[in-house]
Image: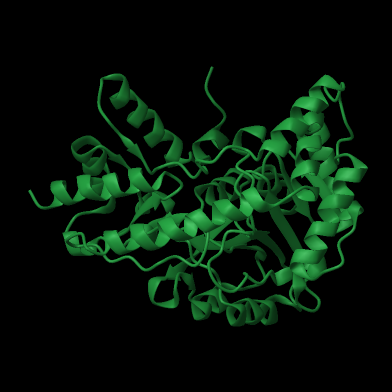
Length: 386
């Protein structure tokens, strides 16, 4: 037997590959500072974890509604309405096991072979993976360092045509930490408002920012009915293992996503939804404290990176990633990332693993302790100055 040819079109997420390599080195007795995986190093807030435990004890361990429990969807709709300045309803909310299904299911529902999808490059590799897997055409648009890793709007405009079916936005962004400026979001809305194009707005880092709040394109006139908002609980509530995400989208698309949910995983775990409800409606001080600590780490880590020979690193505007330009080292991205892992004991990711325009950069997650971040910088300094 052979695998179906479509499997040749699906990609992987390099962070998990590097994590396996790093753990293999640790099994050999090596000390590794893990800056490769995009996962907060904080515990799930205590009241959220307690709500999950109570839900299990109370019997929330059976099938739930495919779309998500009504009271949970109401809470999500209220949260999204308040934070994005829109009027979202529970009927527009689809609860999923993690955020990735809100990439996969709407794409599966909307894209035909030959349709074109514009997406950021460097960008989260699953975007390109899903586009290719479905037989659509990936159209990468570069993110420009000089524009604080926002789109080159002229390239975006030039790539819009009658075959464009979807544009993917991600702000704050992985891997660059960039936030698309409000004026750029407004310019993109003007480009697509009268086109038959859907926007997939990946806002999973929406509450992790260090200046002005990122603007959701859904909040602009005429755009909510053209936008799929992707968000979830993994990042801001440190709930990566709980697998809990959601999408807010037009009701006709929710119906399609429900069909795909029924045919794949039936529903999202009931007890995780109860924990998510506690996260949204309960105290926010632990989430806010986490962002405050990321702010401290961001400043110290990026400033320290700028002291390394051949590195240039602007402070990111959001998320928890540093994306330094390493062209001054004279090394290719993967070559340097591999050397830092095997020679310096620092696990990071090649910028090229996020697309063509990621070459010349490497990604560090500063979702690790302050002490470990400083240790990583010292290890890299020793390696680079040998």
